Each structure stands twice: as structure tokens, then as C-alpha cells.
Amino acid sequence: MSQSRRAEIVEAARSWLDVKYRKQGRSRLGIDCVGLPAMVAEELGHTVLQTLNYGDEPQPAQILAALNANGCKRILPITRRQIGDILLFRDGQQMRHAGILSEKNGIEYVIHAHGGLHVRKVVEDPLIGDLLDRLVYVFSFPDAE
Image 1 (cartoon, rainbow, N blue to C red):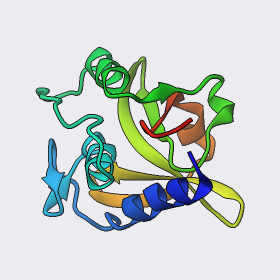
Image 2: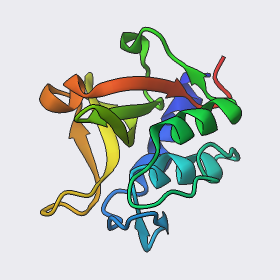
Image 3: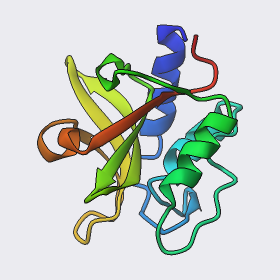
Image 4: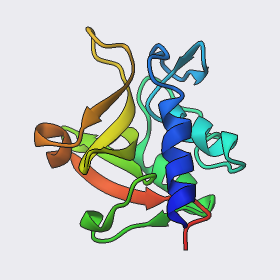
């Protein structure tokens, strides 16, 4: 994927900043963490996670299967991640959070729909500390090389 395409993914993700968090949301009226990469992909002409239908909690196996089935490529090791990649994080023992890798001034960030009580919106946080420690999977969008 060209760097300009990766920058386009990040720009599309940033256009969602401050959109409120809404469980299973898939619009600018509200979105959840899995919905963010799904909607960014859709804006760029891809289906990545749009078909997911889950209850109170996303199902990790379902998310991984949807990414694989829709042409996303798993990046190994995860340290080979690049801006515009889809990041998947664990919470406890289970993978259950998603975002898109961005960068500011040479520092990695993640754009994600934060469902925390005092946040409840799409934000761009540095990929450091606990957030980095919880990173378990990295996938590139379908048009990556």
C-alpha cells in the first residue's frame, strides 16, 4: 500500500474524531470501536467488518474471521505495523477493542471509539503504556501489498 493510501486511511479515521460512542453504532450519530475501521473501510471502497452482528460483547473469533474473509492481511510480528493498519487489543484475556494506527510527530497513536465512562467518543490516543501492552493483532487494509 502506498504511503499516500495509508495517509488517506488515517485522514478518513480522523474525520470520525469526536463522534460519540454508541454500542454497535455504524454512523456519524454514534459508533463503536469495531464500527470505526468498518466505516473507514467502507468510505474507501472496502468491506472489512461491516457484516458483524454481535450481542453485548464482540466475538474475537468472528472479528478475526471477518478480517481474513474480507482481504485484510495479518501483520507479523506486530512491530511491523504501519500507519493506517487496523489494531486489535485485548481486555483481560479476550480481544475486544479495535482502532486504526496513526502518527503525530513520529509518535504512534491509535484512533479509536473509546467507550469509557468519561470519554464516550472517538479519540486519538498515544499508543503507549497499557494500550500498547494490550495490542495483540495488527491487520492491513485489503489493498495493502
